[in-house]
Image 1 (cartoon, rainbow, N blue to C red):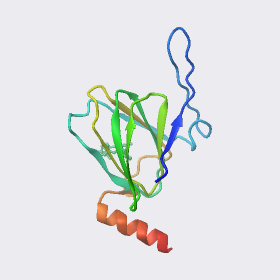
Image 2: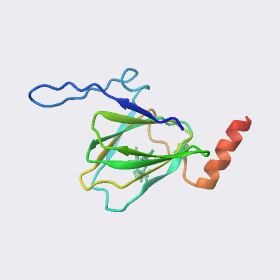
Image 3: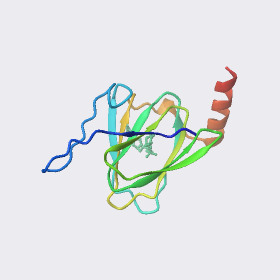
Image 4: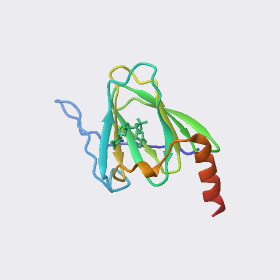
Length: 136
Ligand code: T46
């Protein structure tokens, strides 16, 4: 599986660091939504779904966490631990987020507004969905 991680430009000086993200430039889509998760309870695993259309960039802007990706054929485990790195997750990809550090803040830039009908929350359904997509 090809893992697409962006390394954003850091504008560092004697005062510290700053990262600026522009849609369609640093981020490969128009950003319609930003959300973030924090205070994640120790041992919690979130996600357990895929999206039919949504594309996203995940950034651990503080602390760290791991991402499990599954495209129906292969899986990968990715550590996010740098505020200047973004993991691109395409549509049709099953994802789970886990091993959050206590101080983790995981920010997500999303290509679409929130839409529950875009979620596939059952793994067997997901496998069936991507099999059907390949046939079409
Ligand atoms: C994803 C991973 C990385 C909203 O009302 N608006 C929103 O934009 C989002 C993202 C969530 N919500 C509500 C829906 C649920 O009642 O917030 C609650 C928690 O959402 P969910 O259980 O879907 O959270 P995660 O952490 O399992 O998944 C989230 C995103 O939903 C998902 O798109 O790819 O983060």
